[in-house]
Length: 413
Image (cartoon, rainbow, N blue to C red):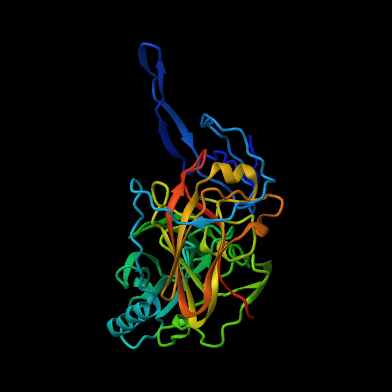
């Protein structure tokens, strides 16, 4: 058995994904086709935050001899396009979910009267940088429902993904910080309480499962230790507004190859996908926390070429580049097991840069010192930066592409 902290997954019996590995063995004068090997593979990697154990059932893939990880990290080179591997199309995305959600709130108020008792919450239940909208809608306690909406950054539209009971209910973050929310519905007259686990299972799919029902004891509050989602009155736009003001950069303690101090530029980090695994978080927040033990992982089938991360800075500010620590750099085992980008394309304002990262190897003793800098060559005044994974490389065990750190930076605070 392995510890999750080692970056090697173990089977905890939940959400197991299966892969079929077919092996073909060639011998002199004859070809023998071996039987397919079915192995249950749990794609958990762990972020260093959890310690859940599991049992590994996959037959290990053959590993190459480990390389000397203490060697100097090669400089990233300019992109060299190979005709056999065309790059995905670089595209822009529409980032106005606040406006789209405000339209949903307004429509709900118009439908259900004067807005009395109508409230909403906004919370990123998936960790992809786009919060979901939880809109309480109905004519009274008996028919209240929390209608749940998400936002499509391609079309710029809000759409409903499901609903959960709004009968005398409160929404909470999950206790362990995993994707989803918890809905607690209480009947004070009967002393009954029902608890529901609410998780997003698809683009327009919401899973609602009752996980507890029973009679409350005197003074009992099952979710007193969990933070409830902030509820805003339907006429209050506070929950949908962005506080406008001067952007304050964050010291990182990092020094660029040119000898300049690097300051992180904060903002919303939105990804086209995020890997969802029970008990683990691979959210976009891992890209900007200056912590080499956490990681963002894309969540589509395959390696993730073409997946995009957008940095919405809120207000135009001075951007000097993008810093990237590709792969899962917590340790060598995690780095080799997981996928990583081998070419990244960056766009800030009208400036576009690409770099070949296939020869990158971090020093696992001090991974943050191996950051790759996409220096723009000039200061760009912009409110958005976009990064696309042009090409990716599978890991020895998993195809999910991981990035340990990535953020826009400035040379001035």
